[in-house]
Image 1 (cartoon, one colour):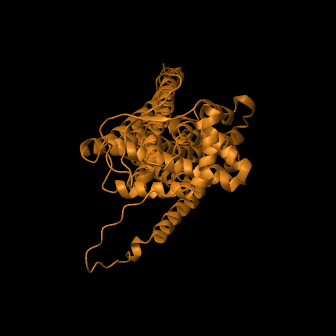
Image 2 (image 1 turned 60 degrees about the horizontal axis):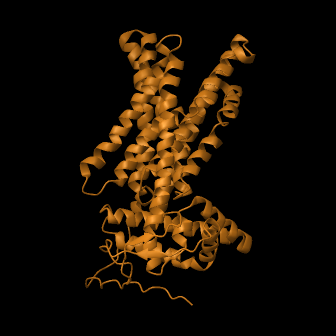
Image 3 (image 1 turned 30 degrees about the vertical axis):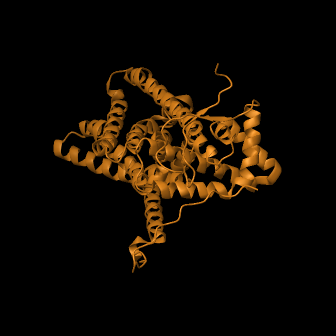
Length: 439
């Protein structure tokens, strides 16, 4: 029976050290309660505002149509986040912030700014154009970026790279677009009710085609640029302070610029919208999609390259790095656990996979000198979580590794310099992974 590798002992604390309880305003339940209250109040206010502008019937029609693309967008971002899944509470917060707080800020600020410009210039038409092409992109992208900033600051352990930034930004923007689509579709339905329009020539049908069919990804695409800025900043070392400070604002400026170009497409002539859509929006969407998928594959490669050090130290089985570096093998392991141990076993394997992935990323950042002083503490926490679940997860992952690659798996250490530090009593030996397909 395997025994747990020894943990290092903690050094004794200074004499007279007294543990102090946090102040009342620092308690977690109070922060969560305040945040939930803020989002709930924002949701109620935005609900009342949208309903007052669309009417009850228009609101219900807009709600029914606006919800259609939401599951597909959420599923796409969740698929992208499968390598190291973020906590559900972060994703729920991002969607709620976009749908409630960001939408409320945008509606109030856009209306106020447009009315102020119209009063100051005595040109309502020009004020509407300026509001749509300048004010709206600045206000809306800033409001959505606030959610990414909050997760980046207060959930730093869950925000480790570009994929995390893309996912948080995209889900925030999905929530924002959901509320905005309710408003636009409900208003269009009200206009059709007044004019008697119906069928494919109606305003509702045209609005549905443009916003739901052609461009459901528009808002997520804009805000994803902000998320990439935060994601690259998260990958930067602590000494790269200028880079960490400048990249998020640069991403936000790109998001605002792209949003402004999209909103101003209607002023470029009869075919301006289609020119911007086909010549700019679609290529950028394809480029960012490729970047996100490439980053996901890079994350899997990092898992395969970093975890063998822990297999050599005895924390992981020799076949586990291979299985954990393949999404197909991970799914096979969860299916195996579910078949033999039910849903609790499958959940345990999924947790094991997530902790192992976090461990690989932590070690990668440690080798690059991009971790903080809590590297050893965090590494110990992750290893401890893995060890608790090894009895359930290890047979499933070994089976998945055999199913993915029936050939024998072994690790051949190379005589190179050691890694950034010890792995709890075991030397960190660099390695070369065996690849049966390499000649």
